[in-house]
Amino acid sequence: MKIDKKILDRLIFIDTETTGLNDEDRIFQIAYEFRGEEKEALFKPPVPISIEASETTGYTNKDVQDKESFAESAMKKDLEKIFSDEKNIFVAHNAKFDLKMIEKEGLKIGPVIDTLKVAQYLDPQGKLGAYRLQYLRYALDLDVKDARAHDALGDIRVLKALFERLFLRMRKDFESDEEVLEKMIEISSQPVLIKKITFGKYAGEFVEVIAKNDPGYLEWLLKEKQKQAAAGDVDEDWIYTLQKHL
Image (cartoon, rainbow, N blue to C red; front, side, top):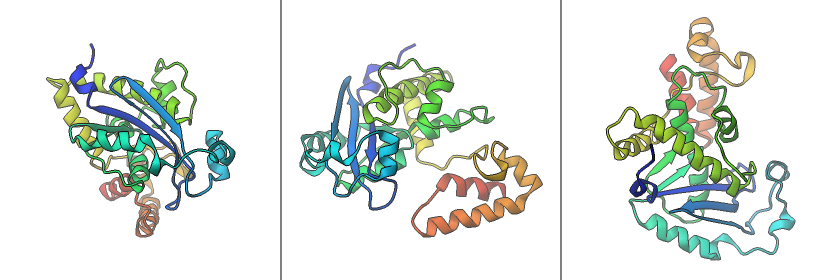
């Protein structure tokens, strides 16, 4: 079974690497694939690449010191043209992060598919240990060549393979590719119910079980998530999950 080419031609698979994870941080690498063509570039960001970002990606400020800014690049013009067509769909893993970073650059994005949320949705029993892109690459045995982790170009190759796996899994439950696409967009626009906790003293346990045995812990966690949200760091999936169980 293959995905209809008319569907694939509407999808832009995209990944960014950034100077850090804070509000002031910006993009220094973008890669995307659209209609079978890959594009990738490094840019000189308006703020330095943090040591932590260099540790993760392998890129340093020396690698971008002679690069053009994204604001003045041909890639920005290309993306503006792609996103000006409201039929085209932004596909990313943990899309809210890439979306936030790209919108900082003045680009307006239309419909979004977040493969992280779709993967969570398709794992109702919480059998997968995690939903990180590289974890899913190996957990689902995705056959992806020449894809270095935490490099934007490598990550979009894994992203596309993951999308295709998830799409074809959902295709079994729908009449058409268009219906699958609409469902993916719907899932991506809503909070997802988290099944397992991956941190703290209950790491690896189901949230549903913790709710029965130690609801006070979840009440504390909800307050912490709400504090973070008030400071601008909104984790909608966790807030939705905790409120659902409490």
